[in-house]
Length: 418
Ligand SMILES: Cc1ncc(COP(=O)(O)O)c(C=O)c1O
Image (tube, rainbow, N blue to C red):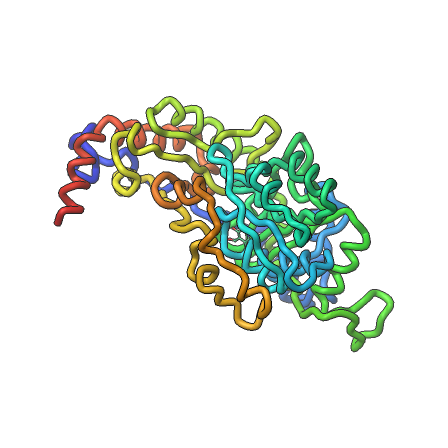
């Protein structure tokens, strides 16, 4: 038993207990699910669960309208269609995000224009956004990455100046706030995801939120086969589909929503505490908290590891932390514009004209490339539902890895030479 020796090299791990498991559920989910089951009303159009959830979620996120949909990818596409995006219009997106933020743009037959992020906050850099605006730009999709709202003051100012639509990708930002205003109400429309890993989940699902009545009417119609409130059942007004959330998901989400406020406070408290513990270590840069961020939802706890200053490469640090009982990863391996989909312009039937002119190899986003290639570390949201002692374990593991950095570096070199 040697607690100071790295577990990777045969020492005792800092932690053997698992962190808080996700999802958290219990009797309230069971009760609502069974009630929905026995009611026989399984679809959104005739049951009460999704309608209740839409109302409550919208209010919690500062909005008059909430429209439950099948996931947080189609929600982005619906928002783009509702905004009147036309073929080959340009939509600015960060290159450091999940694929959907940009794939939804392609599926709206529009052109994603990739922009770099700020190296401290990991959110869209407004200066880079300003530089990317052209006469064809119609919309911006800022992502509230990891759960910290993007620089919405700057982004909305650009949107006003250039008459652009802003769609928040709030897939990570349930319960987050910016200058005390909820994420989801900061742009013209917002999109949330309820996929399994998310801070509020029903396995799959999504919601659109907004305050504008006309945009809400457009989204409602698009998510429901182009129907309109005054129309008859088989009357379809716009190109669209059936993107409605189901009642079983609504039942689970209503029960999950009762837990969201407390869980978000816990994540934010733990996340801030862990950041304060890790920041003093050489070469570690936890995501900088923007002064305007009044609540971070910590869908991810992210940090940058400067290997030179820390004294060991990221891949070795991840292995060492995992062996200490701290599951973590490097997150995205590639900026989105380097993904084969964009490099090869594998857009299927979309963008037939624009494709020939597009060249994503010319996109230059060094900050995103740097963190993908060698610096980023991710810890997942479930851990942050635990106790301060859990955070202390994570911090202790980092401290131990740092204290053993020379041995770790040698181990990694030997391993790489084999
Ligand atoms: C930033 C971001 N946007 C959009 C999505 C898409 O959500 P969904 O998986 O519900 O389609 C995700 C999901 O991982 C995401 O992380």
